[in-house]
Length: 265
Image: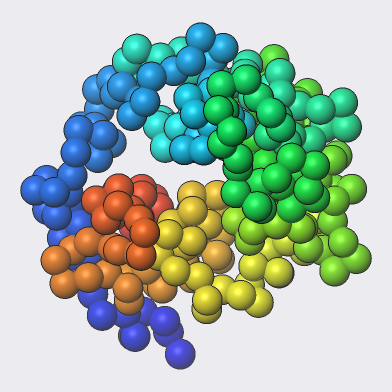
């Protein structure tokens, strides 16, 4: 059966409704994605180039820096230095090619990362390695300064795969790592990771699908499958929502995933 037959709205119509929603409810960042212009990060950049996480008491964290760079990808930054942030990430890579948050970092004031990000744990190491390498790859795809860092991370991720092609840690680490593997000519490893994601695809919520779609080539078969699923999940007001996620920001993320697939469905 043609999946388009079960889609409740056209892609063009879904995007038009989403953009209308963002015009009313979106913030300056959401609108800048459509019209261009410089955007300031939501929190100030630290002197070391990084950004904090909610639990790091203002000190720079690997996760916080990845999230800010990821969120602002493709936009001109006002009052921040993207290269300094990328260098902060690169400097945090361990000799084995992996990343971990630093335990007892000065300024944390007793704060602790969540359990799955505990320094030294294999889930934290795999997830942060996949995310950091993915961010470096996306934000500086042609910069020779960071390519060796990404290559070394791919080696570490390859060593982290279990016999079934899985990584320890949260599922998004699988599609982050798959993008890194594809960029470093590890096609088989990327395919094994996406097979793991495929077995859980029907359980992904909107936020997961938006994140997954951001790491898939628009011409890939996965892009079509993600787009069709997202179209069935759009709310009546034109937005996409998920528990615990800012609705305008999530809607903007979905729009970024869907726009390149126009004409492919």
